[in-house]
View 1: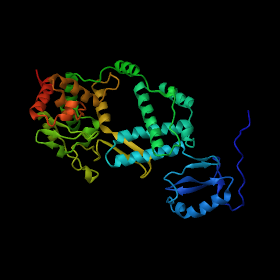
View 2 (view 1 turned 90 degrees about the vertical axis):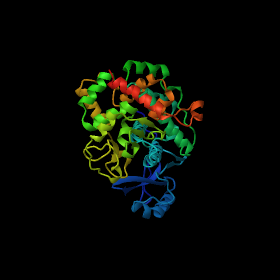
View 3 (view 1 turned 180 degrees about the horizontal axis):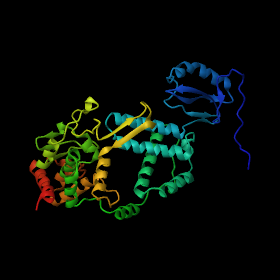
View 4 (view 1 turned 45 degrees about the horizontal axis):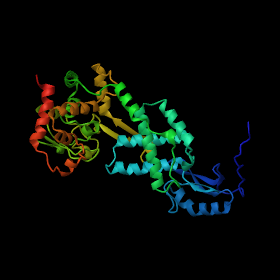
Length: 400
């Protein structure tokens, strides 16, 4: 085998020198940081005097578990060729930014989990210490080829979109010195491939008989959720975040959490009765006291939590709506179609509601944005139109 061309690390200038030579070409020190050992870098091998001087200036902060003012949130790697951003640093900065959006309610926890999984893929495939702006086009092609063998085209499309977004963020934040060129080998799946995959998976719709069977077999909370989904097109996250304040008499006024788009719909008597029949659970957190649905442990049905506070990598995401509904599908043997789940009820509502022949009213009930020119001028949709949409779907489900 050919000998390694990696330079041999130098010896310490003296026995009590506080730093050690790291393979990256820098003098390094590992410090206990929030219960774990974390490496900090202080300068290139060729200048141990400057590296020790920086350590002396920063050690009071670092040993106390705080970052000195001169450092960014995540230290950059520096070599004799200059400073550059690692894949790990890029991912950490990106996830920290997305965490802020979750905290402000601008991003769903489930979406954050997808970003985290994408970052884990990048660091696992390229290595944490890999220079982020030095990844070659043939390596991107290899990553795509590896993913394409393991996941569906739609999932591959999502990974590629998120990865491109991460590197665009790095360029705009000036973490990367140049824009990443992914090459033709990292292109998204074609629209034809996505359509073929969707057709092979079958329609994500429930029949009238299947919905009635689900309602008959569901427990009180899940029954109310199913009725809300078929009555108004609510999805998993929608029902989990629904508050009593969103229900005004027999009307639902509930801006869509995903987009903050207005949503208004007429509630059926069966839906209101099902909500009234729910046994109230004691919330674990007082801020969840007004939620319509709580699990037996007092948490929202869709939530995330960090096993270790302050550590993104320990975040656990729970979608109890999908889990409980999936079990009900299996119990009733309504699980033969790939991808069929609670969100399929929203697909079903939209498909049936189209028969009311009032697209603007249907869009308002679902919280969809009308980006057409007519939508820019339309100020209001009369409740009578929303009632007709609701009655049309009700007749489909409960009529003769």
